[in-house]
Amino acid sequence: MRYLYIVLFNLIAANVSIAQLYDYTWVLGYRGGSISPDDDTFGLSILSFQNGELQVTDNQIGEARFHSNNVSFSDVSGNLIFSFNGKAVYAADHQIIENGGMWFDGVFEGGWDEPQSSLMFEHLTDSTLVYLFDMDFNFIYIEDSIAGVGEHIHYSIIDRTQNEGEGAVILRKELLAQDTFDAGKLSACKHANGRDWWILMPEQSSNRFHRFLLTPDGIDTMGVQVIGEPVPTGLGQATFSSDGTKHVRYNGISVNEGEWVSIYDFDRCTGLLSNFQNANLPHGGPSGGTAISKNARYLYTTSNIYIYQYDLWAEDVLATRTLVAEYDGYLDNLPTTFYQAQLAPDGKIYISSSNSVTSIHVIHYPDKMCPDCYIDQHGIELPTRNSFSIPNLPNYRLGPIDSSPCDTLGINNIPLSRWRYEQDTLEPLEVFFTDLSDYEPSEWLWDFGDTSSSTEINPIHLYAEPGTYQVCLTVSNENGSDTKCKELTFEIVNTSSPSGAKETIAKVFPNPFQRYLTFSLRAGWLPTDARILIYDQVGRPVQNRRLSAGMNTLDMGEVPAGVYFYQLIAEGQIVESGKVVKQ
Image (cartoon, rainbow, N blue to C red; front, top):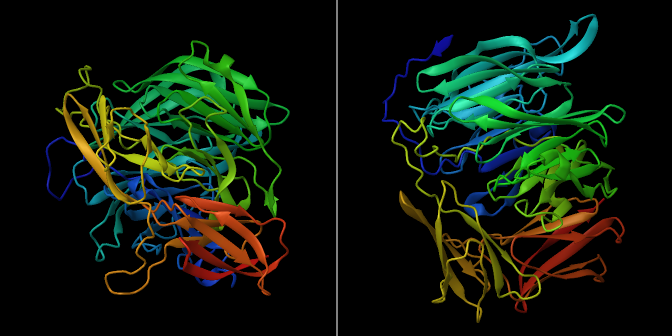
């Protein structure tokens, strides 16, 4: 069956946007706006990955409630345009768009909120349109017993141009399929032609996969594939590797019944799975998820109180299962255990908790074998509470398989340069550079802005003296090249805007806080002599900490609740000050 949508706008030749930064802004949190408590511990946390550097901001206006079901969708430049939580479609200002409210109409009250129940894609021929796929959840009788299943898969189309750019749903909840689907685990991967999308949805407690293909003409239903043994449904997650060669399903059943890790090879031409590997393993609790490193080698599963790493390049992948982290017991009123995981544009993997807490976990170097992967529990403090939520995002920057039978559209893998940096905490003039580039680069050239360069993929560079440097990475292959430059400064940043107003050079959150307090420095500033001084109401210092580029999180667990004042001091000057409250 084919569902057709007649495009009323310009048709363009088969091609892809080179940037495709659709995953660059994430929306987490809940209970903002008029329903937010006075202390602002609830609301929305906006995570932006512009320029490959995570920046977190607080939004107290939007009233959206993001729990397990989350899609955050940006334009090709990485600016948020829509988000969806199973109950409504929201614009960039976090207000419900026209025809986007009262979305869930199922029988089960919580049927809108299963993890991985929705996806968004740009329309393949008209960039003013966005596809939304979503699935509702229900409890039904199967063979005289109650089972939680995904019941319906719908698709909708959103027009970005309507209502002065706020958008409107112009095709709403068209039924695509009805069956007894898995609870969530809606996942997608680019076709080998570099344009179309494969969408996979497993059935509940089975070995059957429903396959759909999104093309410029609409949505094709490609039938059901039966492969391997039936796999029990549990709370979990499904994901593709960044290169599209592997598909993984994680199902956490219970402490007694364990978890199921199912690994498949995936053919991006045919949309078929093969080489089924499956294991029933001890499980750490009732929640979990999975994600794969950007280099497509290391698989991570989050098993409530444990994180495991697998080597997908090994002949026997399941035999490589290694415990790499155990929940440290930290309470943010509630346990900060491990739940859903997502590979981010900065090459790191972020992990939500299965409770309402003000932090998320992060794997800083997932391309490396642990312990070098560096798992940082509750490593990213948020300005608001986040309950379960992490967005469901495919790899939007996957090109064609060159010279394959499916490489028929004339789309080439032209490299897209992306990178991030980190400042050494002991030697502030030493910088670690990490390549994040897409579309199969084969050559790298770094220009550090001080007449020196490198052809390493991930170089380390020591600057001779403080200053401001224009750093550029040029990536190339036989199809072309791309260059990305950023300005890095080791000097005191200018805090005045073009209008003359003072700009913030450090964001402080959460405020109020429970134990951990984060100072996030403005992107591009690598201070050589900056400290944060925190003192109590009678002027006694309680913290004196050196700051480095990016996020700096302070452990304030030993100071009593109360009001504190801070000063950010750079090269002997007070460049910022303010007040924080510990609860």
